[in-house]
Image: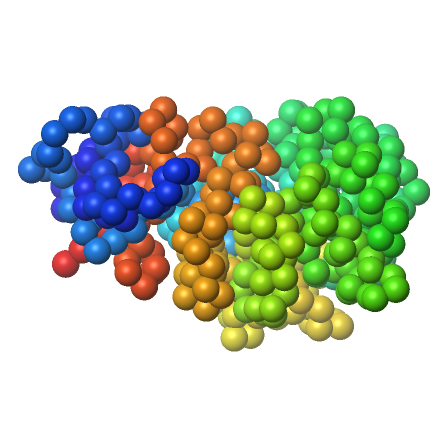
Length: 383
């Protein structure tokens, strides 16, 4: 099928709502205003399909058998391409807890790829997290969030750090939040054992994201509500959700959407090497992981170790299983993370002037096409 610069006939999800029989016009790598009159004969007829913005994943550790935490440049690009094939046209590469010097070295490599436009930046998840809620992080490498050490990682990322996940109740946590805010980096509360009151204090200091809400933090309690209640209640906070059917019960996802609203939810993958690759034995940082039936767990202890999720599956599940409105899913999977990352002037919605990043879905919300910057990565096969 010859590529066309006009996509016609689909249900197009715009910031203003759903347009039946809509049209998206692409010129080069950008979306441009639709031309007056009927779509040209050369237009790609997408009747019976959906066109939605390319997905934006702000928390992703790898895929296709390779990791952002310790991969080479070629391996990182392979992982990025794996997720592009599943609709993620903008991706932040996440690290895991490791030796500080090794983290700084990897941040330097990731920043080069960010400068080339291959990734949208760097997310440091660990080592500044609670040993009580370490999940799939090496306990012997954890440390308190000393602002000087946080600054070391920011410097290594050369202005490409987008987010740092912290247990803000640890010594130095609040000062580190303030440092991140000062440098325009998202302070995310996660892998935390904080109380409700400590979480409120961290939000007041400038934290704006909940790293994979519900996971790696105390549960809701009726006398000790913990961080979940504070993070859901505060309008300044966006909550990450891993919608793979393993990390969250559907009722927990419904609770998050009910209390935070679609404007404050960001779907993420938290993917590790096995995403888009398959079951087997892997490593997450220094830790051994076994993936069985698509679920990644540490060999020692059995903790969930990231996910094998891709965002096309998260989208389909959100609509067909969770029953969320398509417009809300688009906000959570594209628009909201783009705003948080400060790239919403370029991506996150189908508006003239933005990159032509889009995903074509069929009536069952299965992925049928992916365009990134005006080029088909997955060309729609419509017959």
